[in-house]
Length: 249
Figure 1 (cartoon, helix red, strand yellow):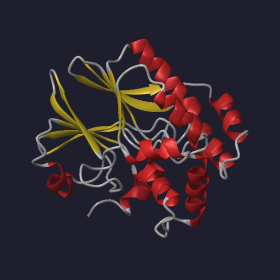
Figure 2 (tube, rainbow, N blue to C red):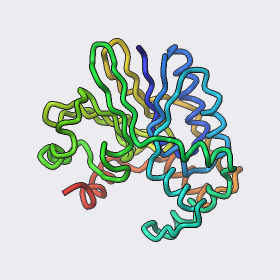
Figure 3 (cartoon, rainbow, N blue to C red):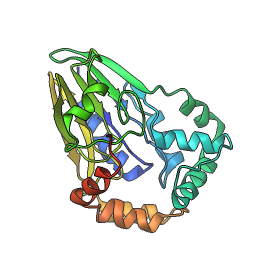
């Protein structure tokens, strides 16, 4: 069984298209979309692209997707900075009733039995929460209460947009990285499970052309997205320092 896990697309359609083209060439059996398809600059197009997948796909609700649903329901977005609220509300206006209903049906986790590995649990941030933060540097003792007793040999997560592969107790915890907004090197990050192996992948694509497509949208932060999420991603060291201030204690 070959499973592709794609996380944190953030409606970056050019990155999504590049990854899906590679996934098609690989001939995967199943795709897991691990949350945060939204928000981002090309929401309608990204949702349509995922609907058209030719292979079985399961989609998990991430904290970004949840925020868009909250905006659609007229709820307050008080926990988010003003700039993020503006983006979330803009994206909510792009989402039609059919897509809203689809989003509301996405589960928080997905589990699969994989030959050669055992049970693999896919979640957005952690198995218990879609917004908790931890990185490759977070001490394992803080994470043991979350990852013990799950009955899974491997947990695949995302949320922090940086790939890693580490052990927490007896559980292998792998971050698939971000398709649409990676930190560190440019490109579209994702994960492949193949022949009992978990492989971290990065797909190159035409960043300049992608930036042009995003700048042609009405997205409120199109320039910042093009500059700092495509062409010159934020450094991993910078983000590790930032996340260390807000990670699990």
